[in-house]
Image (tube, rainbow, N blue to C red; front, side, top):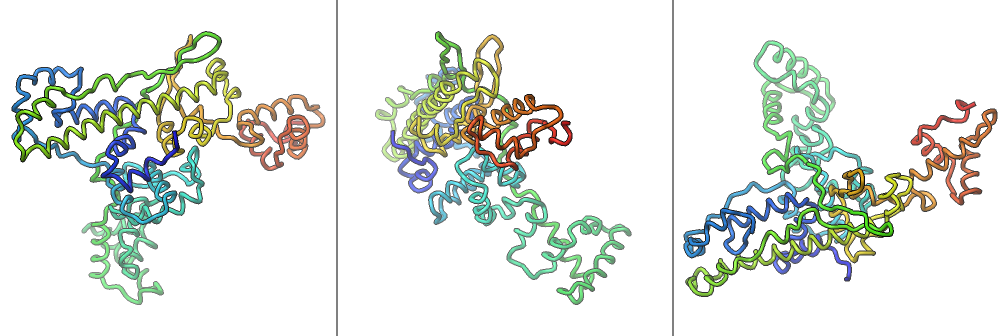
Length: 445
């Protein structure tokens, strides 16, 4: 199967590929969220049936009335922040890789609309470098709502004032944000704080004079800004660890991967509604109902592909990490970057990233345990070894040293190269030694 990028195709040809649109939506979701979404769709689409819904079964006799024009009442749902941003991103004229990075970065926005992690955290486990993701931050910040993608309250407010670069409001946010809180209100203390601030502004080189009215007007403008740009958008529920995959031991040390919930078997097309569509619907309503039928079909196709992709990625990772699943020792993890997974299963890097991130695997052994699927995607580091393996080798070398002549980091670097074929610089040895909790040589003698 030729690898292709779902996000880019979605953004450029949404009208032609409705199934891809649904699939991109499903990929990062766990099965509970997918089921909830489809259940909601089934309430407003007579062609989509949830086989476990008693309410659906009770509506069979009223199906004819449901399918006629009076039945359809579209629900008004508050869009999520990501959905709001994706629509804008799709309209931007950007290189495909930059567009994909922008879509990926939007997933890191907090419920308030801030980018709270570092560029290194964003890039970890992805196909982008920190520098690439940093480069698209200004583009993200140019989108609606104003202030989105800020790294701090000050930056959020300045983004909303970017059309007034020389205004008093900008100066206050940039240089006196901490003092502003004490200036708000009609109390004596607030008035005194405003007077102190006004005296500071008189001495500011960029503003020769500021009247009380000008200061109060600027403070009022700042108060009207939105400190949480994502406030008015639907938010995801708090994440709950819900495994979508389970791995069960088989003969000869192999492991079988399966879905914890066969979502596809729950939903199907409503054959009665389809039959009534051809017999009873007036011509003026056919187009609308045909669109609903097509949406139901697209949802079911996307659901099938969603489950197939998750299974392919899960089975490949489990096959590659069999030693770890048996021992539960992180030192048995085999380096498995997401790019390798993508090539092996015939999916794009972005698709694998969406599947792996935030998804969980239930290991069904003597002691059942749930782990993040991303824990099996170990990046390749120094010499093809994982960080844990490098730390283990350092521990082994230090245990073998003479107490009176402990190895320096430079000597450890040379020993790793000679004995294990690992060309690691001294500063890298120092880094992994600290991660392993090992003291420097002058503290080990």
